[in-house]
Length: 378
Image 1 (cartoon, rainbow, N blue to C red):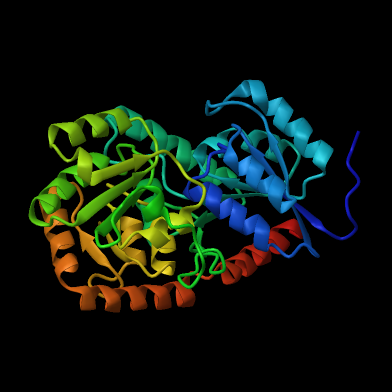
Image 2 (image 1 turned 120 degrees about the vertical axis):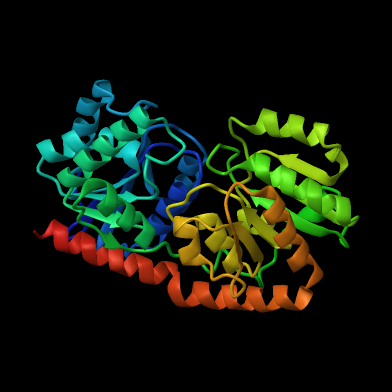
């Protein structure tokens, strides 16, 4: 039985591969929150359950799960098509490669416009030659079958042009919810919660512990810092396949009493409020939302000098950039900013100004709304 549309509203289906909350999922939550509900009716489809679905429920946004963790899972294609018909979708906005591979056929068979936001390419230099070529072929195919591709950074778009030869895309950079990520806000005292002394310099690694995010280099860099600074602590928040290896490395380096570890938390603004320096030693990035959130909270950022990150951070102006996979250099940079509080304050102020000027969530949403209207009427 079909659902009756509310008169005049454009029904936009936001699809993403998982219900866990990461960068792409946070973007979707912000987007559906700030969409003009007088003109648009957002519906979210994820392919696994997780905390994002509970967040949608609290927001009063319709959310659904069709379970699969596989790309190109033909078993769910007809279910996705039936779902789109039942919900009378007008525009399909896909977030990420895996979601696209399980939505594209259904949307095209219903003659629905598909918009594809590339939060980060599925191919990268860490892959074997065959796997990388296969993923490039998949991305080239699906980006040519969508009506519009949205890159979150110039680096993302340039990678597509370089690998595909031709690539149609507009760049719409992430916006940050400045009401949620507010340095003047009131937050739970997580230093007290984790028994971290108030006089300690607190470094934060708040991200999935995966190969891309290089937590091993983070721990090695911190160990070098801890040898020189007695009052410094590292707070590592997140899960991932490298968490066991990271835990073992911390023991081997003898810094168990200097590192606090916890699993994923949904109160990211409170975590950011507790720390002094946000660290992201990743090997590649589309555009790291975590860095933007830390900048919005007025935190010093020390991050890898890679593609999308260097578009967010201006070196020694709004943060610090370090070559990837170089824990010694990362440690040296941390020691420099630790020793220069005035430099930290200047970069923090510049970071807040950058986010307010370039990465406001309402401006981002208005641009995306224009795209929805253009393609819904085309």
